[in-house]
Length: 353
Image (tube, rainbow, N blue to C red):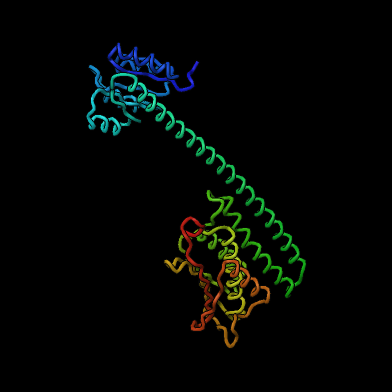
């Protein structure tokens, strides 16, 4: 039956000392096996489990250093307490550098056995601490994997539900004749699609919390260009995006803003039968944070402080910007309309990269 204090292999070429150490350590609660050489000790390690090895330095043939290196090369080596009759510091330092958990200098009497017990207890406690740490890390990793799978499934279900809502809106719009109601439903469908894209990217990527804004905005802009451009009035959307990742809530807010600004530019910047370009950029600005802009070369703002848009669209832009703790500004010096939004820089690891 295994001792409560641990199973020890004591390796020493001195037969008399082996007997003394074995009896003394067993009195102190250890289960002890002994070996007369490094080779014998390695053979015993390969045949049966031990919690710790006590290894003498001076042995003929394969000395303590060579045996220590061989033990450390095992797939799951036990801790080694190095034992030497020399009080030279260089031996102890060399043993510790080679991977020994501790060292003990041989002395006469019970003090030596007490020192061994103290070194053994500390080494075994270090092993137990590492094992508990590894188990905790493994449990945390397993928990994170389960959480990521759950979040991925949630994002999948949210995207599917929003897709169903979008289909209902599309069916409703199809039953209406051209006019304000049908246009409003199409605008609503585009807003829903901006949110769908976020959740779609979360459940199809390895990261279930952060959205790759380049891929997201590319897909969003492509869909807007398809829906807002016509053969008689083409709208060319030009996108430039730095590698940026945002948390899902910020990505949704930014996506809704981009949707509204592009929709406004495509509808109101140019004449109904005229082509026009809209440029979108999202970039790092160093310590200043992130900059989003949407600009056109159309008729401009005129005397109005805000670009022409539906009341709902303007309210959505303000609400989404407020959720990002910022505002959308319109630059007066631009030939057409240039809307900008700045996101403050965040500490690393907080969802902005």
